[in-house]
Amino acid sequence: MAELADRFGRRFPYLRLSIIDACNFRCSYCLPEGYRAAGARPRWLELDEIARLLRAFARAGMRKVRITGGEPSLRRDLTDVLRIAATTPGVSTVAMTTNGSVLRRRLAEWHAAGLGALNVSVDSLDRARFHAITGRDGLDDILAAVDEATALGLRAVKLNAVLLRGVNDDELPAWLDWLRGRPVGLRFIELMQTGDNLDYFRRHHVRAEVLEARLQQAGWVLRPRAPDAGPAREYAHPDYAGRIGIIAPYSRDFCAGCNRLRVTSTGDLRLCLFGDAGISLRPLLQHDAQQDELFALLATQLGLKKAAHGLHQGDTGATPHLASVGG
Image (cartoon, rainbow, N blue to C red; front, side, top):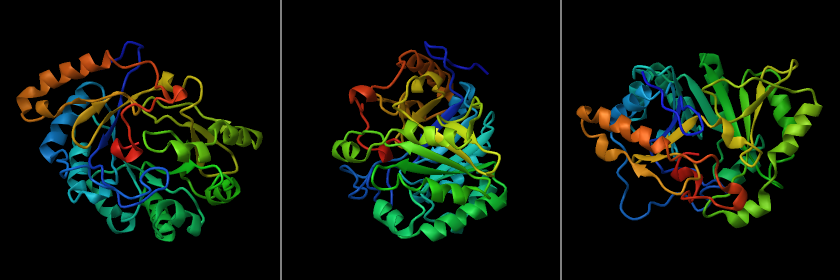
């Protein structure tokens, strides 16, 4: 199989595929007013389109696919999506990011369909804070589901927490207590500016390097990064079963190790989370005979990928909020 690369020699074994842009949470940093469809109900990718898309990306070198949203569990055919991904030749890892709202009820079903790695968004270990951030009061149930996922034997179970100044940036001691005996990854994600959150960003942004320095001072050691890993700098400590990752998009050379591409729920290829625009792949997902043409289009588009995003200049591209592209 031919592996595609961009002008800077970066290869892309990792695809983040959004299958729906709707979400049932109202996270303060993403959809504080809740999900509202723009105009007519969007026509999300169908199962046969997803199958053709994944085959083409696998041919281009994709080995890991992460199913995202919005909230992917809002799609009734999510189990079928996972099964398609897991049976695509060349795909070795099927991961998913979810808010965990139905995780306890459907985890076994998803695992049986081929789900091998799971990220759950948990922005606070404090029940009241979690409710204030997300608009939902389900923290205890979600954390119980995370423990069940670990016991089930998934390849990787991780939690995602967006760092918010004045909201949850004092919780590191609580997180360390929680991680001590759990073989779970925790990802602290630096708040990113999007098209509609500038005021919120100015109030609550905190540089992730501040937290990273605290970890290093406490004896946490940076681990080597796997080729198909996400953007986190991962730290380990001999006294803890869990690991901590730092995702710092405003750090120097963050984009140098980019290894992932994105496709939106309606089939637009996004070369960068904060790119200016996407190109629709959907016209080339209608027939199996279009695979060569689709592969050629991917090769052409990779030649247009920029060296880095424009967040440092306040350029958020065409991303109004993270749910629109899948983060």
